[in-house]
Length: 293
Image 1 (cartoon, rainbow, N blue to C red):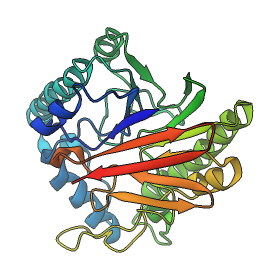
Image 2: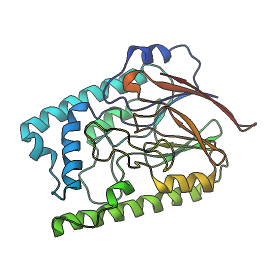
Image 3: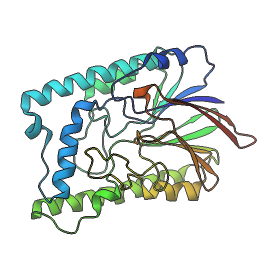
Image 4: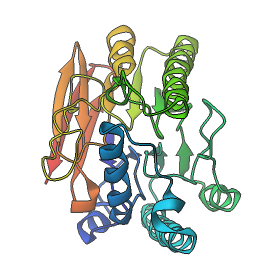
């Protein structure tokens, strides 16, 4: 089987991706998230990371951009994200996908009471395509392989190393984040325990800890040098030994590495026209990957 693996579009769809999606004989396109999440959000995200490091309270998007500014930005983000999905749908190739942390409004977040819930209109938009298979917190069987997904926003451990908080409200948010991470792990392992098929492929947004996970952004990111990896993803790969674990999120990387016998593949950021072509021989247990920069 032959897969086109893409992710981290951030609302952009380069022409080279339109070309590669036609006439290449792909069995499916695999999406690792962040079809939206345009660069306009970055100043707000970086501001909160800096404030958190300096012990200052979290600033909401509405506080940062203003009510009208936030509304305009959300409208812009949704519009470009729709174009990404329409381009993928035009390929006429089955699309097995998860969402990323930049895709707020497109998925429901199940691990706490939160504002990260899907817009019903966007869900309806996605369901129009018969080619799309959403495995954000689920799985699907495709040609003898169980594809297991885990996407959306995550509370990475690098966010949870604080010892001092500016006030009780911020400490409460820390506890909520910690509990969400625990629930996420429990949910993922429960699903994996229920899947009997030995031929599995993981589709993740964040990377597993130890592979493609170190943040390399000296310009304005206070998280530079820290890990954005997920420990329980690594644990799951070690325990369940999937054929492949696809991941994204980290624009700094493109390539493949191994955790045990499992090949971990980051296709690179589609925003810049990067992608991976992965061929799998299930019977022989062989995987080959080619990367386009």
